[in-house]
Image (cartoon, rainbow, N blue to C red; front, side):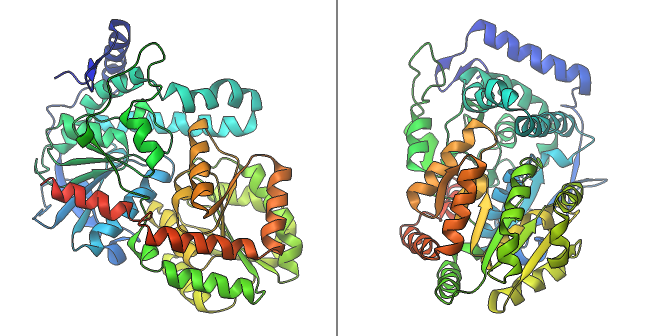
Length: 483
């Protein structure tokens, strides 16, 4: 079956199909076709998450050393921003808690393979677009928002990606065909299907249905009921015709993809937040800078806004810039007044872990900045910091689904809007604050009205009982169950 010509029984136009063929040919011309190449898979302990989550990272080696067994689960992913790594960590955490060994299979990391070269180019383009969208309002309005909401929504976009994914199969040759496999980006899912894997779960990240995320042949999982209906109907993916829907068995609503150590500690973490709010302790704000390094100006205004409360001991600020040391230096240069309150925690994941453990039960003041050149530590530090924080400030991307009170700032791309809508409906976060004035007003309301934190914690506890945060466990169960 040509997955670029027919998608869930919907025929793709000749024009769109020819474009998909040309796109594949373009990549072959730039990076070659390594379909017949032999890549031996070895495994090492993954940095940062290797010990706590039992994660084994698959790398290209001189010989094959991976020893897969009945308790192995492969997580297919790419680094594109932080989001797909974050979801992968949630899947790995759930698998580890369920007694499985998670194997980290990052197509982007295979630099010598065609798949790694293609994904690196696409990642650079996406990061560049994200940054441009924050600097130039006209570009955001005319290009970036439409592309991320309607461009990626088209079924024809999926046709092109399916064709390109055929060039990503070489690195799959040594994976057992029937191994449980969860992909946290559509390309590793499509490539796995093309490579002949038979037990593939495609964990869809966004709450806005887009053709981009379709991987026919896999079990699709979504985090929300509205997303389920939108994907099931392939809603709006072709403006000129009503499409045939996805089959019932091709898509499952699972709930939010959240790490086991966060889900299992929701009650204790919320109890700490409520006690701090009632005791009028310093509000602990956590600011997570995304993988594209966008929204720097919003973060600068946020720091300036909080400085008086930090000086008065009424607020504390955690800033995780991930692996973006350049962004951190730009923040410091833009707000030099924060230096007197500043504590830096750089490139020492053990020290970061100790800080979070001590902060969980102890007192915290000032501004604490975290930066790790290792991508695993860069992403997972936010997970550790969440447990000892009161409010997370974030754009409405993958972090919109996490069980912590959240202040949602302006989105980067139209598809993210529905992440804030979901959080506001569950009650564990605000609506999207799209202007500086609206964001500042929300900061004041949360900082001075601690009842907001208490109410959000109550909604988080209710959502926990309803199983809303159990998506990672269910995705793993589906991958294992279809075996």
